[in-house]
Length: 455
Image (cartoon, rainbow, N blue to C red; front, top):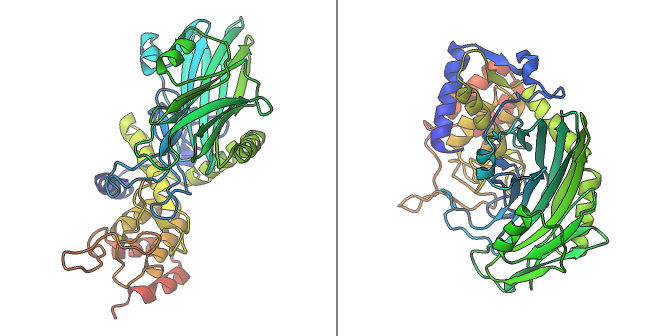
């Protein structure tokens, strides 16, 4: 979360808690509930991130999981062009996407422009760090396309369409793995290639000499597979509903390869049809296929686990209710989900959950941890207490310097001192007092107090 957003959210939360009605999720009306989920369903922005708790700045630059307009998601495994990590490169660097294109009875949805041309509003009804959906309606077909990231090397897509018409409809889904776009050459990065594995009924894409292997497939058999190094050819296949197959393709650095699996769905009148797709990463083809099959077999269970995790969070989460503008209500969700994503699992010197300040290049900072702990305490007070205790207990020095997970320092003064934020930034002692006065956890305070004493 950026510093500006954090300050605004912090102030808004305090003002709202003190002066306005903050409604618990348990009071949200049934109109905001879907399938008994507690997340407040609405028309959120159809783009965002999924949390990758395995990603860290030093030990494991696993990659950021980002949406790919209009209907995709993918691995961003390149340098991080954001503050605190500008141009910090990943040795094996690339982009790898699952990109969906839909043909509904002759109408193609492949780009944002296609949605606009057909007067279709694309939105996201469910938008958390665990699950993001794409939702739209066209000619009485309701689409619900959910993405989740259940483990470090798997992106799952659960694609469902409900037909409210009295007649059936036919869909063609083109699922493409776009793999390539390295920004920095490394040994072995000569190019990429794709072929079809008939036993797994999956597209296999690889870097020629050294790199990650990706598998794209579904729980239904495709009607065609083909690959190309030409974006023009790829787009022609999509818009002409070309269901021919070929033996694969290869391309040279730095161009991507486009590996397409096409599926046909018959959606009966007044019925719902679904398909589950998986984009899986591995070290070699056998390893990647094993992970891929496992992800498909457990997809619904994994989705349910993520939904339950969200339910537990939103059961006690304060939400804006009443006459607040929609943008404020949505902004609250975006901020609170960003906050959830910045809290990282124990790693390296951090023996507790810790506040990473941002997902791209996590680092531990007292001021940011205090701000986030205050906000988090209104939803998950125990986790807020843990990250506050941890930033003191796991600190390298008593002055709580800004630190990475490997104990490297992130803020060095001009005089060479390893610095932390000033006690006024984020008001950590006020935050500790506020949380204690609301929770009265004497054991937590006793554990924390020795680290707060002036020596």
